[in-house]
Image 1 (tube, rainbow, N blue to C red):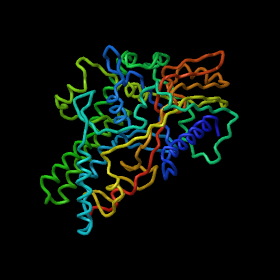
Image 2 (cartoon, rainbow, N blue to C red):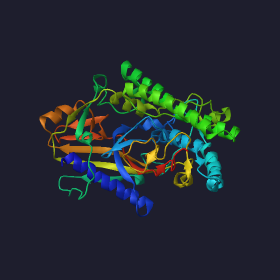
Image 3 (tube, one colour):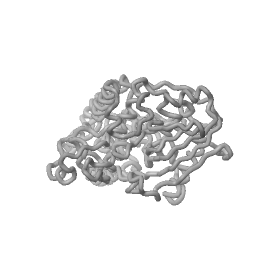
Image 4 (cartoon, rainbow, N blue to C red):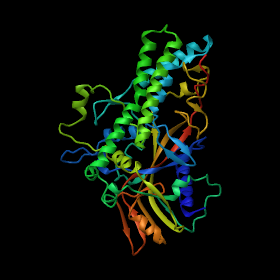
Length: 437
């Protein structure tokens, strides 16, 4: 296999070993999938107060949005889709119904507790909505001064390739050539202020993505509507609930078409009512301007119009720092997901998940850890084609190259900033476990 294959296979093993250490043993069916790296500017987590204060609240909100996706995974490649964790889980939670009288009491108790947890939201610091938090370990993962969160990794030609490496998606072997409107930004430091200087066409494209993504989060709207229906009218027929869920589902499909036409996929939190004034006043200093959306604008800018070019060079030495961030969603009830004998009106058994890590169901896999890197350095015997690609590329395989420098004397390509490059995911059980009668 090519040298980039070996690099990602080696990283795959390092990540799983770290995840196993975090779990204290076996990792079950957990697997690693690489994304096209998302740069994360340091000022994503800083308020624009005089001290440029790091905000733990901003870090929680960023990760809650960043991890709020049910991806498609194919040959270790993680691709975002128009399905959110909160939307798809909320739909199942709202519609979950017992297949028989014997399981009704147990499901009812689990569902009441799960709904109470699902209703616990936080007021956003970014916009007039609320969101469901995803909590991270280590809690200070966003503070790059915390050296203990990072492990240095070197991968060189002398390393022994993994004995049983999983198949690598061909896209992870390629350069991703940036669109012309972005090429001039590639060597600039990754920061919110620099992203704001993107050409107007790029910003308009990112804005289109945000509007489309909010349409796609109709799922979060109809999970609320269905919940209200079930609570207010406990005697309502399952057929009526199914009709409502199906109607909302068709709206999501229509919105997905809009998003696919934009050729971009980024889930955002659904628009919700303004946070309570007391919460907003307590958490957001007057005049604060924050940059938590900047990394998505950067990713969206390159996703719409990249072209791919194979990497010719096959002799790499790579070093980087890596941080594994474990994720916890207190509003997702394992008891419901593992309980047998329930269905969602209007849906077939396994329509959300078929217990297969690479199937296309809208709740097939759940990201349970995010993999961050920084201080990336790639040294190689660059071919002429690759040397030309360095100047134009947004990615080398899964590594984002925004903010890069290239030392021609040492033939070293460097990217200092933090980026997310991979996820540990776990396949969900068959959901729903039964078909609608």
